[in-house]
Length: 232
Image 1 (cartoon, helix red, strand yellow):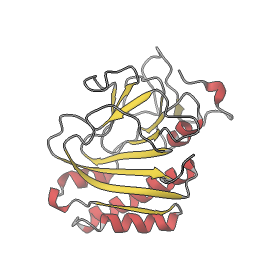
Image 2 (cartoon, one colour):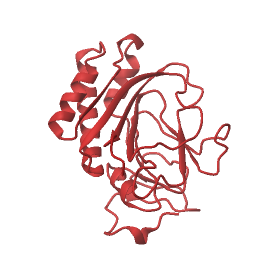
Image 3 (cartoon, one colour):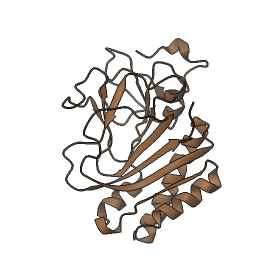
């Protein structure tokens, strides 16, 4: 259960906190995700900050409508998808330059490439601000099949995940069978998840994640770690 008393200021407008045994989520959510304790879901981009600040919240999900680039990428040939990784300073100019360089590793049509650069820059700039990162380790990678079959937690301070093509991350409570248990919540393309890891001062929490299972085509995944070399 999310301890709302741990929030130092009022919950921002348009933020929905899901509590155990609560009814279906209402607006501003476009969809009605099943409830999972330890997860905060918002219809705006405040989820990362809540996930990183609230003691009993391990993962924040920006449950947004898919940006237009998702449909464009669905139409792109798999051979045109970008694939690369960079570690950069977490300021807006460096993030924008990194997004342009990473997208440039592919062969996307200019409108698709520009739309992807713009959305990556927006998502990562927000993540950098909310995580107060000095550096970001960024991966924009083509994934074939489930990269992680087992539910797990990461040895990072904070990690952002967003699938731009194909299904997104699967989540489950810590009590799940890590090798064969079912997912309790599955993200779609365009949804942005921020996960606390074991290096976060508040710990990784009680929610596990894995790559989506049963995927046949190639996915395009954005992942970013806040201060990857930080030992705190």
